[in-house]
Amino acid sequence: MKRIIVTGGAGFIGSHLCARLLADRNEILCVDNFFTGRRQNVAPLLGNTGFELMRHDVTFPLYVETDEIYNLACPASPVHYQFDPVQTTKTSVHGAINMLGLAKRTRAKILQASTSEVYGDPAVHPQVESYWGNVNPIGPRACYDEGKRCAETLFFDYFRQHRTRIRVARIFNTYGPRMLPNDGRVVSNFIVQALQGHDITVYGKGDQTRSFCYVDDLVEGLIRLMEAPDAVTGPVNLGNPVESTILELAEKVIALAKSKSKVVYKPLPQDDPTRRRPDISQARETLKWEPKTPLDDGLARTVHYFRTLLAA
Ligand code: NAD
Ligand code: UDP
Image: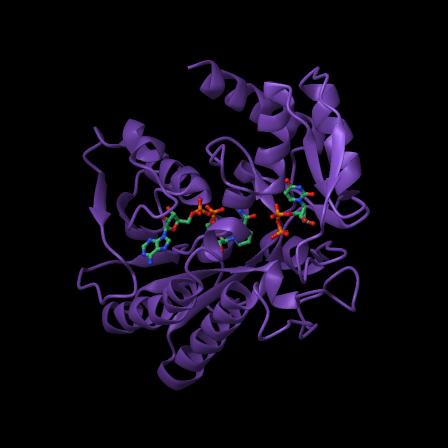
């Protein structure tokens, strides 16, 4: 039985990761300040003796014993990470320093939830890990993008300087049950709008692309990366290489939700990346991982989740 910390464990991806690691018979310490996470996300796990929930902000040091750390703490939706951009940068940078310090002292393995946002508005398509990215360092997305880039820097400096056992996952757009209905991200927005019969808000012309990965597939990838030999530090892209335009996504959601909603066009937010698709050759080769859930299936499950949630 391993002692595993999941920071951001009460959030969307974190709660799925906690559930899976607990089912695999590990001891989990879920650390969260509940900024975008919710107790309900992990409520079903609370009765399990292997599960502990701690309210804690990762910008402050944490002294516990552990074998592995998954560092997921950080708001991921533009609406939430731009709400208090200074805190967002602190969460990524101070959070990484504190968790790396903990990993160094305990000799634990530590995985960083990095992001495809480190590629910014990418000039290379699809995105390969060797691409250094195209990020606006002073724009409204920078608190997230540059925070995550600095966290990657810290991970690799701890690796070189202290031989810390690091893994860096660059996660591409992930969706599924337990996203917040008011989260602001595209999948939850479109599904909630479709189910409530409201207009579907497409930003810009809707010709920008994203590649959407179902959360169970992503969690499998994170665990495989953590369990890979120490030589596999990453960064490794984890995402679904099937690319869709935002307008195609809107049409799919309307059809799956059997909705009468109409598409309306809203201004494109500043620095919104025009296209995004992961090259996952590295994950395929080193982790033997690739996503299994087709977009239609994952969206249908997510529609079902939100239908039940909204009815309640
Ligand atoms: P989320 O907002 O649902 O989860 C983030 C969690 O971190 C929340 O529970 C929040 O309360 C917690 N948190 C925020 N600041 C904290 C702090 N200072 N101290 C402690 N806890 C804090 O988002 P998510 O989609 O589950 O994302 C999880 C991680 O994966 C994030 O690091 C995000 O950057 C990364 N990621 C997600 C996606 C995606 O598409 N979902 C894509 C790329 C990267
Ligand atoms: N988007 C949209 N309507 C919405 C929310 C988002 O058209 O109601 C667009 C957004 O402009 C972006 C894409 O969908 O081009 C994905 O946005 P999200 O915030 O989910 O993720 P990110 O931009 O961080 O990849």
